[in-house]
Image 1: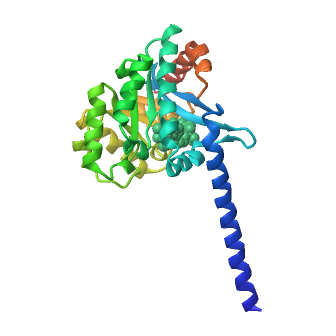
Image 2 (image 1 turned 30 degrees about the vertical axis):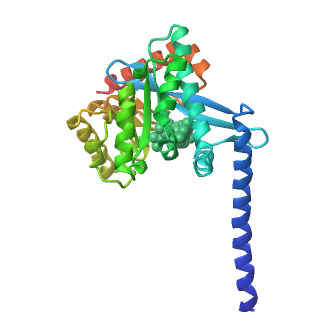
Image 3 (image 1 turned 60 degrees about the vertical axis):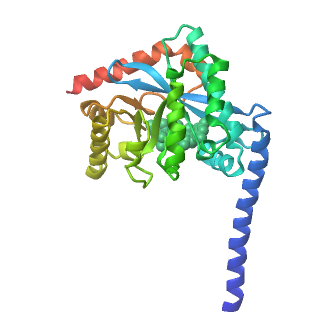
Length: 291
Ligand code: C2E
Ligand code: MG
Ligand code: MG
Ligand code: MG
């Protein structure tokens, strides 16, 4: 009997694994056409400047509406784009679309908004990334101080290459943030070499501020490191008023999270710009009232 069971089990694993791989190959195939078919969109998540209560920046987040499968999360398709090399054309499209959008908001009379765009590792090793970004800025006429690029600690595998590229990007006048800071198992020494402007505290720490003294200590430590190195801090994933309250007390510069706003369509942001600020004011007032 045992002799029969084992092969069956192996067969089960093999078929479920190959169906996952087939699914992935199908998605990769569809992702090839997604740009040309205009299935990719950007949403923008407003970031709240705690000093002024204003939205001075947003993060651009890519969305894919698959014609048959519906919305597919970037957590699923960005890794496929990275492994297939499609991240190069997709990344360029994201950058150009985001820069154009900032100019469009400006044209519609909104106060200056800075856009943060996520970079993938593959883009840092693409031919002439700096030239491409320079061209996008020229073409869209976006002033470089309104563009921030987000890198992650996992990209610090080649410190020399990264240092060169980041200095070239800084020379263009754009700023650099480290996304998901504290989750990357990398040495902190890169903070000495890289011309970084901002740390983004990962939401896994923020969301446990109340429940875990370790996570709270890590948030405090990141804020302290940032202060000593004169870096700005954006805290990600704020969902609860208590998290915001703690970050305000700790002098965090900027927050981003569902408590304030989800990522939204650029026209919705434009139409509701005033409402967003009224929202922010009532959230911030309610915190002052508690104190
Ligand atoms: P990320 O860069 O860390 O972006 C923040 C993610 O957290 C977004 O997920 C956002 O929707 C989500 N988020 C924001 N506030 C909250 C909150 O309060 N609670 C919770 N639970 N989540 C919150 P999203 O849009 O699904 O993106 C996931 C990841 O995909 C991004 O993480 C980024 O690594 C990657 N990604 C998205 N767009 C791009 C892109 O254009 N290029 C590249 N290379 N990667 C991208
Ligand atoms: Mg990001
Ligand atoms: Mg992040
Ligand atoms: Mg994150």
